[in-house]
Amino acid sequence: MDSDCVPTENLLTGYLMANKGAIAYAGNIKSVGNGILSNYYISQEILIPLKTENIERKFVPQYLITANCLVLKKAFDEINGFNENIKIAGGEDVDLGLRLSRIGRLEFAFNSIAKHNFNDGIIGFINRFQRYGKGNRIIEDIYGTEMKPTIFKPNKKNIWNSFFAKLQWLFLLIGYLKMNKMIKKQND
Image 1 (cartoon, rainbow, N blue to C red):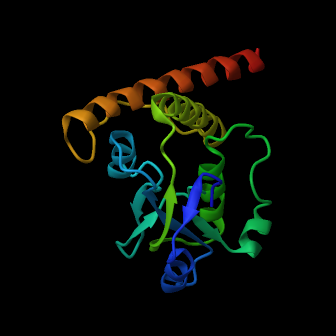
Image 2: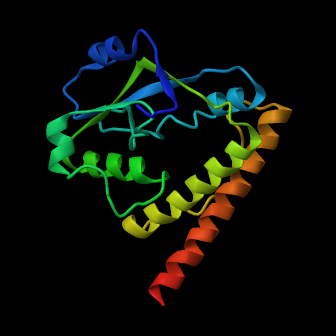
């Protein structure tokens, strides 16, 4: 769990209920606050991994977000933990989850809830998504997959979510382009 998260009384019991023999579980994130930005983060499921269908047509996490996840120590050790070459708080948890998914099954544990403090305002929003954009570019470099941010529609359509979705895309793109420039400079 991240340092800016608060456990709920069902954090651990939610994982126990989800125990299905997976090597890692993606927990659920709710917001500590209830402001416009907090509501946007939650409605967009910013700290919930992308869902993908497995062969049984069941939704499973494509990767992990370490704001709230549970990883078996044996699996964590087998992949040598976090990638120490990722020096920013952006992309390191996605990389961890992708590497874990190569050696075993990931599952959701939606009843395991932690609350995240999103009360860092618009400056925190800008910094967070620039960092995530940089992380996207790092993941792109590691996995050879296209991670350049594209415009998207909010999950829950209203004027604020539409506005913040455009801002999110813009700051993801700025971070992505900054990291792209850094990577090109290193490779020259």
